[in-house]
Length: 205
Image (cartoon, rainbow, N blue to C red; front, top):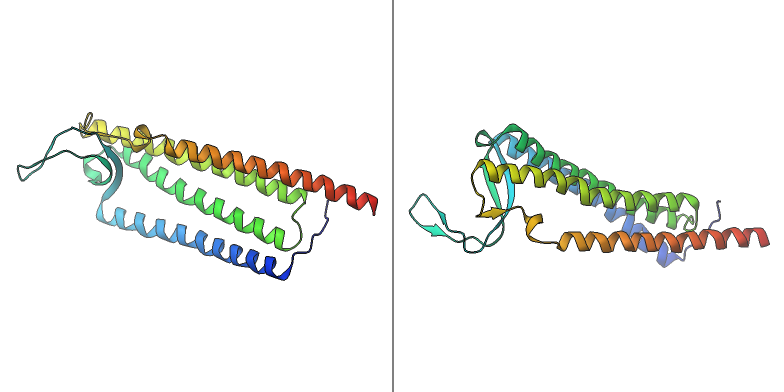
C-alpha cells in the first residue's frame, strides 16, 4: 500500500519543524543523561527520588528537625548503598533516557512519513504500533526498576515511615500514561481507516 497524499506547503513546513525539533530532542535527552550519569559516577553518588511523608520528623546534624513533604531528590553516596540498589536506579535512569529518545524519534519519523505523502500507509501504522509500544515500555521499565532500587535504598538507610517512592504516593503518572496510550490507539484506528479508504480509492481509479 503506497498511496501518496501531497501536503500543502504550509503543512509541509510545520512537519519539517516537528521533525527537526524531534531530532534535537533526541540528541538533547541522550546528552543530558550522559552528562548527569558521568557526573554522578565521577563524584560517587546516585540521585534517589523520594516523597516525604507528612508529619515524619527527620533529625539533622545541626540539631534541627525537619518535617519533609512533597518530592525531593536525595544525593546519596554509593558507598553507603548496596550495589544492587545503585544498579537498579541507574538502569531506570538509563532506560528512561533511551526510551524517551525512541518515543521522540518515532514521533519525528512519523512526521517525516506524513510529510513525504505516506500518511495512510501500512508503514505508518507500524510506526504508530511501535510508538504505542515504546510509550508502554517507558511507563513500565524505568519506573519498575527505579521503584525497586528506591525501596531498597529506603530500607537500607532505615527511612521507612519518613520517605516513600514517589510512584507509591501518586497515581498521576499512571493515568497520564493510560490516556496517552488510549489516544495512540485511537489515532491508529483513524489511520487504519485512512489506509482502507486510500486502498479503495486506488481500486476505483
